[in-house]
Image 1 (spheres, rainbow, N blue to C red):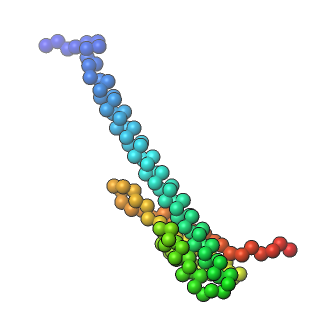
Image 2 (cartoon, helix red, strand yellow):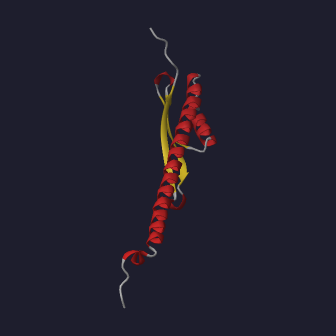
Image 3 (cartoon, rainbow, N blue to C red):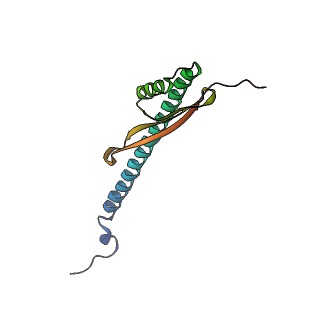
Length: 124
């Protein structure tokens, strides 16, 4: 038996390269989708935290003791869970929320965000 030389020895090599390149492109595509999903989750958490802080600050300015309950309601309406809420001096409210992010076969992760809201003091 003689060994093929030249171009005859490379038969089928393009198929192997195309399959390998397809696998690499698929992996890059899946990674891009997962990163995009995580970024969207982070933005959803930030929006929910901002809205919850504003709702709580609006109640805290009026002296309502249920300011954090209002923050929890607003966070829940935005698909988030209120994890921390504190009303400080001057009706300044700090909140923290988490939003579940589904990452397909990797399971569910949590994106978190914090926000602070309160009245603006007049400049002297």
